[in-house]
Image 1 (tube, rainbow, N blue to C red):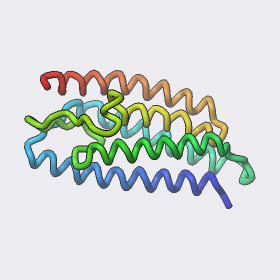
Image 2 (cartoon, rainbow, N blue to C red):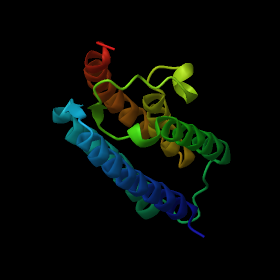
Image 3 (cartoon, helix red, strand yellow):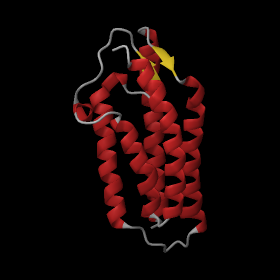
Length: 167
């Protein structure tokens, strides 16, 4: 069995499902009067994540030998990160999107991981971008995309903090 293809196929299916959920939540929030902040950098985030996943697919499925081992400890860490992702999504409920949407009058979410940490979704994503490449032995790849993501998060968190500051 090609474990890399299975793992990356599941990650791709998860991401597509999340995009469907995010789009549904975005439409509903906009209909409730929310407005988007930081829309200009959003396509860059989408491109970064798409390139990360496509590059992993290319490296782990097409370029690596079929018998290439995967790191089970790093896979376990990635699975724990997915549980964190689910916790974030469940905690935000209908307010979870991939965009920065501000719903006037709505209080900040204070449950789940948001009780303990600012921007827990961004922490999970940062972990994923580093850890999944490590599952396939691509430390350099994880480092490069982690650095690119750090630059994007610097822009995004500043935009989000400015939008939510009045609260």
